[in-house]
Image 1 (tube, rainbow, N blue to C red):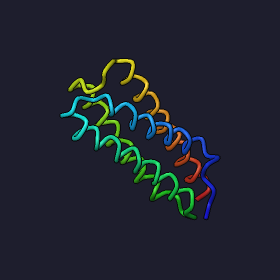
Image 2: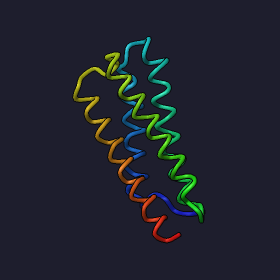
Image 3: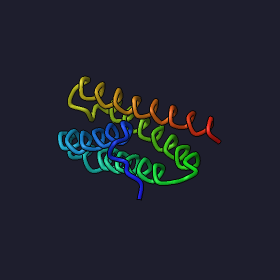
Image 4: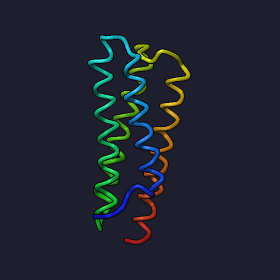
Length: 117
């Protein structure tokens, strides 16, 4: 089993997932059980894909799946902003910056696998 705790992308994705657990608790009841659940599940899926990709010899297919999952997470975050699920703009801003950072790290990982392959 490959180690993954040392990966910066894993650390940041885990921070995002933990942050969603906390921020969704502040959503209204309506958004907490709909959009909040999707945000929490998608952020956990991102972490799981990172762990799975790190353990594979051919990482590219899982990294492409991770890219799609991150795009879906970004859409959910933007939707949550539009329906004013976040308590403040600052909460949205932090989340979007963190998710975009994970996206950039994933793109770098993808480029590094393309160079080797």
